Length: 141
Image (cartoon, rainbow, N blue to C red; front, top):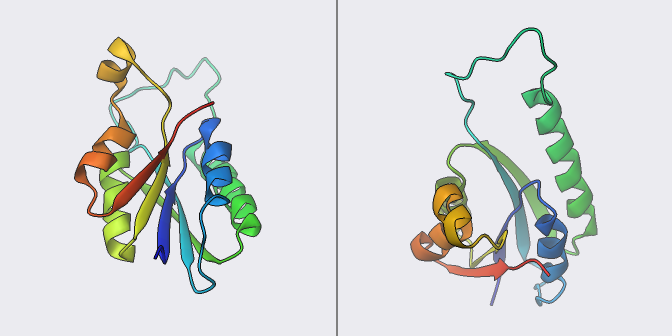
């Protein structure tokens, strides 16, 4: 039985589909869902030009993601927690799954193929390969 589910979400459009996929699972009343988001580590070597506007500050991005996860959390019929961490996405997802002793990891796939997949890598593929529990990969429509 799926008692603890780790749901890995990013800021892409696939996050909505990942949350929708939870509705297809039979969650026990005493089940638990952990919603997580992994922020990439800050690029300390990157210098930002002072004469141009910068994208969102890390603090604003963090607050935006936290609010989004809280909105998803309100939709869940079982107990849930939010985990916001920084690091390598696949490694952090697997680490959290181990900490919470997850029975299942639910993760989205951006559907990258060919050279894009080679260059950008596939977090979902790495999680499937290295996780110690089952992994459900939700694909874009």
